[in-house]
Amino acid sequence: MSQKNNEFKDLILDEERALYAIQNATISQCTFDGPADGESALKESSDIHVSDCDFRLRYPFWHVSNAQIENIRMTDTCRAALWYSEQITIKDSHMGGIKAVRECGDIIIENSNIVSPEFGWLSHRLTMKNSELESEYPFFYSTDILLDNFVLKGKYSFQYVENVEIRNSRLDTKDAFWHSKNVTVSDSIVKGEYLGWYSEDLKLVRCTIIGTQPLCYAKGLVLEDCEMIDCDLSFEYSDVHATITGSITSVKNPRSGCISADSIGEIILDDNQLADDTCVIEVRDELNKEEIQNSDNCDETYIKQCRCACSEHITN
Image (tube, rainbow, N blue to C red):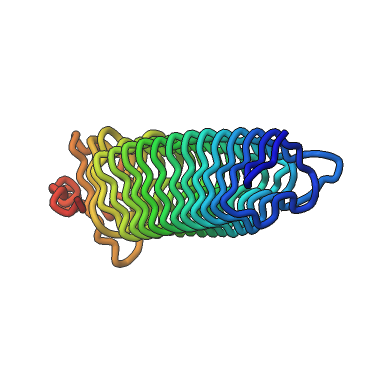
């Protein structure tokens, strides 16, 4: 083991605040574990490079600024590993702990695997690439997020987020993007029930959407060249402009905008339709009138309106 000129290597550190407030330091091949069970090993540190280390004690990176972290392993016993920190880059690492990242800014995570039930809350300017996350309630109330080649297995994801871009990703999560604002998802698979309720300016481009009752009560909703699988009761009370490749299982009481699909299994316009409903629906295949509920609202004038082109209304 060695400690020289702010270089820490091959050490076992278990005391409270073991390397508190160090600056311009390199930490490598160290293990933070032991009977002293100390917390906050690197609290208030800055300008540090950490590599090939194992973290098993609580709260290792609180109030840290400008850190490069590579090939480290954090167990679930770290609990809340990274809080109140800024300008952190994490690569080729595993992160555990119930609240792994919270109230942080300018965080980059690449080629990493994370298991954290409450990951990424109240954080800003968060970028994740080529990474996987398992989380029950990720990204709550966070802003300015970029995710690329990202795999998520979660629940209640992206609630109350703002300014989010997601590309080339796979999201398997229920209740995603509730109350979100200004989110764009492109070239991705989005699986899970109750997608995007109460969202504002949610845009899905060339995505595959899977799950029941998606995209209800939304404002400024845009779908461009998307596929919808097992999506029944879609778009209820939403302001939507959508071009869908293939079929939609059913559409219920959309509020305004336009919906275009090759076919729609069922168009439901019932007594709960909003008085100011102005949505235009285009079925590119032959429209089956018998599948439209409540024939009183679906006379020949309405059928013609349904078949009119709406591509000019799509936001590019």
